[in-house]
Length: 438
Image (cartoon, rainbow, N blue to C red):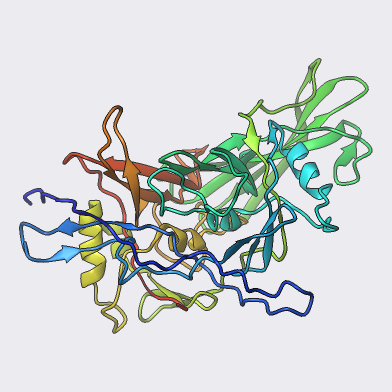
């Protein structure tokens, strides 16, 4: 098949409407509270257009920046005078004082739990869904909600951990960039901390689960669970392992252990690895989550009863590979379950499929039958700038939801980018979406 040539026409759309909230909200105890509205619009203003020059040169396929089709709820963020920002979409309050930089997830959690602003002492680290609400692709530079006065460029802790890895997910709001990465957790061991487990080995500060797959990587045959302990008196670090064997149906065959696999003397606190300094931005209010997926086996779709988004879930999801423009075209021409209004999802829509409590191979909800260890296209884009080049090149976002692969723990949730300023475009998977309570 001849490679398609893609021309990107950049449009900047100004509509005079302010996407942040107006200032006439009632914040009293009896004031009106907006219903939960997820996901939000990404704020993307630039439309990167795919022109199908080979098969239909007069047809253009538009992305997240198309002002006529932009999906999601209007962003309702209001700067308050007490050092907080109120998000009316979810009844959440965000700290907007200078965020501290920390190397240690335990310190970050403690900072939020001990925070008190204007009499509110119910603060916590945000989860990934909540941090995603701060993404705003409307600027050519800053990728974060502009109403915040104290949100510097950099990585921010989430409360979500990468299953079985001893890592925590951090969300990076950079200049010209947005991505999700991992940081090794650093731990504080305190035998007086009631949230930490103590035993004859000392204080347990981490549990790491490592699976082994069959040679075809189709099912788990063994899981090793390692509990890590540190003794504050003797400065000994102890690892206690338990091995569990499974058959191809996921039934436990045998359990070995627990047994002590190693004991070593260390002369410093048990830090898994000193991660890069990461910002701490606290949030207060009901947690975002609880997406409610149900699969229609006959029509091979999955409906989220919370967002009213309908997702493609047939074999084509894992069989087909597309370049970004081809993915736009594929979704807009898809006919499935009696519907013709399918489209490529935004980055904020696609992230809702991830269940960060899922202990399986993928973070994608188990309600989905067809999953892939590859990246999935989104319709969301931002600008990419070459050194000393003011040109705004397209930068498309993908989400990777791979969990365990090739007998080792891998990146089981990741946001990646690919700048498209040449014809060397990668092929990724496509899962289309339609509807939404918009």
